[in-house]
Image (tube, rainbow over all chains, first blue to last red; front, top):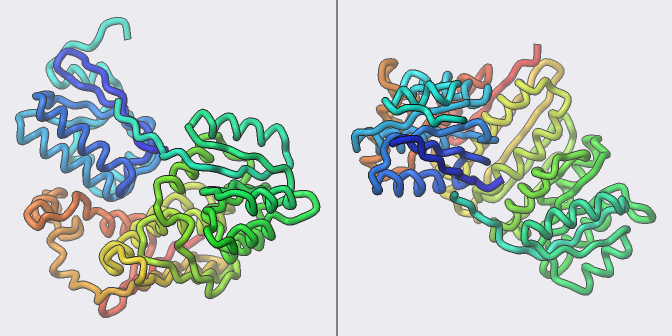
Length: 121
Length: 285
């Protein structure tokens, strides 16, 4: 499935819900362009919901880290939410679980940016 | 929302199951494609003669004529379509015959609706889905050997075939093998073959009682592992992303985690001296 990204804003945190494959030339460039545009607009607190990422490869992981650095250089951060077992395993074996903040609870993830979670969700 | 719609394609859907034809046709039409339907082999051949299709979705178990023969006829056309084989016949012989006759992909029935959309999207997004051929050197279930052009799309195409052959393995094993295989094959195609379809990569998949052995030989000159500062395997333990800075400096795309991942996913990873051939082993007990 081609990568789709649904966007939601909670205070100054932007939640991106990724759907589809995040692989070499299959979603990685979509993510790059989307994050670059947000960062250019000043949205640098990004939470990526990975629950519906169907496949992840080394290029997709590389793009996650690259955009993590992009956001960090602008004073922000990229954090990860709802990793699948498979994606979590890949983050572990590449030791990136020591780089990214990874959350299972969306409200806790939003709060970690210093923002209040959306009410009624 | 970022959404990348697939380009509209003309599709011939061949299946003797009328209900499935209607469901898949509705799904594909909704996705923007133009779909024609055939219920058996002769009808499919007549339609292939009369029109230029980009993609054929082809059932193998057709009445009066095998889908494999329709596949061969479709691929013999002057402008052959990409043919996706769909079948409940999950024997390795059928799969290997489909590979030999240049099927683009293989879908085992039943499959979720998303699977057909994904494979059609892949074919539609590829300019060369119908034209790039895989040479079959050996098509035994215990020893599959292929020679393929160095085009990126080959990684998913071959991975799909190979993983169907290993369908009896536990899911975690299949996932690890599939991931490792795709990472190494992508490396071979991208770095060894320079993404040049005129250059070839040779792939062997050997299934023994207690292990899987995969070998990938690329047409490149190999590499010096001590000079892979742009790969994650060179990072110090306390800095797992240092290589990305090197990649930025060199103008390389983000990545470089493939070897580090593969080492963890398989039991043995062995390169030849030049490092343009790699072998990995996954033990099954």
